[in-house]
Image 1 (tube, rainbow, N blue to C red):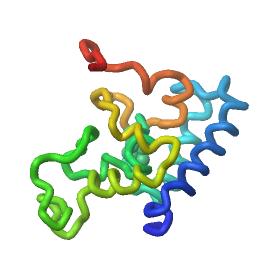
Image 2: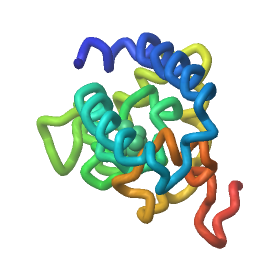
Image 3: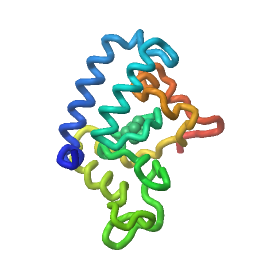
Image 4: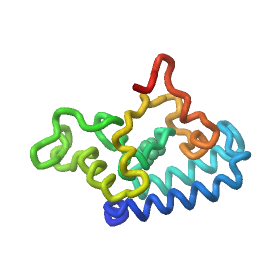
Length: 152
Ligand code: SF4
């Protein structure tokens, strides 16, 4: 899986193909609908294996070089904390490369989505945890920012 993670172009193409296929059935993709349970199961297995996905329900992989920001021990979604070690590893888990160092390097390999790493992401809606990110994406649930949040 590390090979694929380090070649995010392939993962971005898979993302595009999946998105195009799901567009055909978007009418069925509603939170709490019949498809929810199946999507949660498929996402947990497939994205779990590929990205170590933590099922946050608001996927931002294309904004982070196809690197899951929820694998950061601090769950940071807008760049690294101040504790990145000189060797690029995490201050909490010294043997683990900082998720944001990886995200930055991998974003440079993504011609279409790479620049999205510069966008500030809204706070995570924890109420969506454990639900299907695809369904939340298509239904608009993932775009409902927290009250009071405004993009700069
Ligand atoms: S950003 Fe959320 S949905 Fe996407 S891979 Fe990470 S935990 Fe899973």
